[in-house]
Image (cartoon, rainbow, N blue to C red; front, side, top):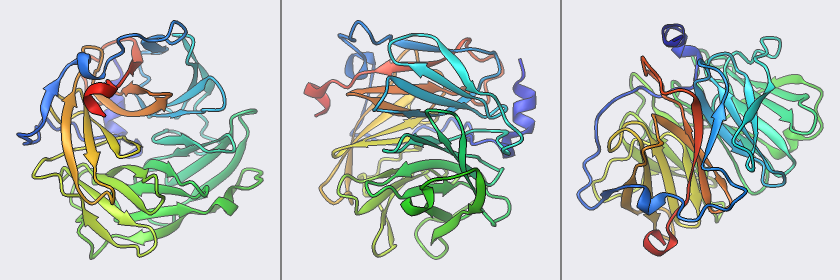
Length: 339
């Protein structure tokens, strides 16, 4: 396996420190696939999608709701896979491309205009690609050294927010900056300096997953090191921890639908977990409903919505003998039990 090469390049990849610490949450239950697994997956929706290659180490995923396609990025060399939700096989859509500086690919999203936005870890770049042609439209570069651009969220107005796991900064790309594009490089500008807030950066991976609340007033961000979720007020640019009643959630990818937050983790529970959290109306408090696992999960990193389902990426960071082939698995929430 090529895990040693990946580990030596970990600073150049958007990854999670593979800690085994379990969160203390007495009110939450560890549930199995019965709670968040497909009981009646549509006939044209496989339960597992295969990524070719024994060195894929897939981290980010984005679903284009206008098409049947989803995209998955590799931290190994920046290749980007494309899959059709109706087929279990995927293919390499964009090979790793050092010409773009895309030597790794982390968190990603597809926006309403069909642009794939990819965070580039320690490269310091965010790339924007046309999903119709594969052309590079934009490249944004942070001037902050030793960054780890980790995850991406797209707001309703088209603005893009990016977390940095090593530097206490949240970045923003304005919707107007995404128009047109010929592959030129532009500055990646800071939206919020987190120094002096309740988010304290320490050694290791700090801010990771990010999501925009449905009312478009806040960001929800996950501090992987501390196991704390925070709410960022987009207008006031203030930060406060989300009160989970003492529960710790070491979230990687975050998905938010209504008031239900899904936080994928390779550290909570048995290390193969999707945390299910019910937020209050203002996203200031939450209740951990369950830590969901499934035999098909292997060191998951993040997920994307496909209709009501979750497509969860099996990253397997740090695995000396990863389970092959690398996969994306489909989980379906049980609305009756999880609301």
